[in-house]
Length: 378
Image 1 (cartoon, rainbow, N blue to C red):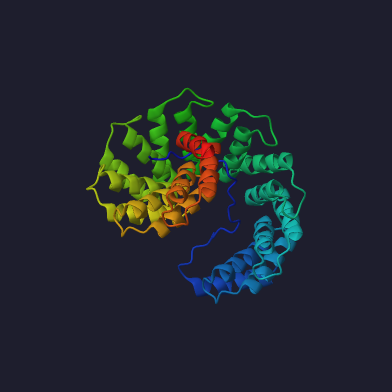
Image 2: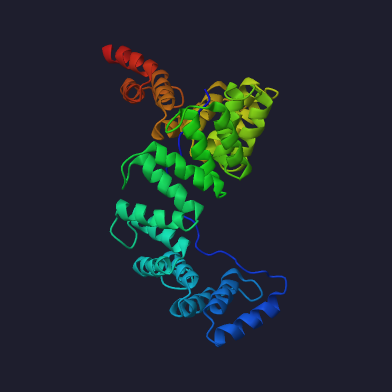
């Protein structure tokens, strides 16, 4: 069984420190910036702080970076306030202080800094250093978006999709994801593609979904590669091409997408788009499992259970079935129930078998429900 990825709805936090300098002559640049800062130039202090923050032209020194960001902020440089807020939020070069971070992000936002508005929205979204308030989060994401920060448009789109802090509106979500995508935000392209894929807020259009998944993938967004692979595997919006699907699942897996690793394992297991190779299937199921895919843990358990691509080991099978079940994967619970029922890798126990068949049934697994009823009668 292959898995398809659902809509990304998590809020993404972007760093508020952005290099803005040409470092072709770093040592000379440092001297010039120091002179400017000493003469009261706020931008000079900010950029010198950035050099210390990044360790460019000077030995990296977060404490010095904080001091220089302070000077820049105190002199009215909004970027200095935003970067200083980031240092307080992360506890870098200064004692971590979320309340102070919020105050500095607010100063930055009031000074016209889009990243300050965005990060302030994140703080309201998460209730960090401030009482959680989705309406306020929406307000500051909107400010960030209006000031040209694509991440603000993306997070605002997520809020419209969820209906959190604002009335749910898929059409607005689409418009904002499009704005984020046009601004180079790969996750915006992915979410916009999924809206076309599902026909939410727009007329369903698989060809357009494919184009947007491709844009997300090309932008380095691993989940975009995964969904594009799915479209190629199923021939949806594009000519079916298993070899291309394998390539895209591999890109997704290499980018840290556990479901991409899972589906790549399935392709190797079945010999679809690639020469059948059980050892490779085991490798990618393991990678998927380690990356948090409960389905990967279940399939890895199956390989140990059957001795396919690996030496048969019921104890290892039980271990991975349990991990899959704990992760909410119905098949893992069902398979673990079978192991208890037959006493394979564990002490035989009808009571434990009944428990895990019941868990599988609760997760809508029909076989789990049937076996639960059978064992219950004994």
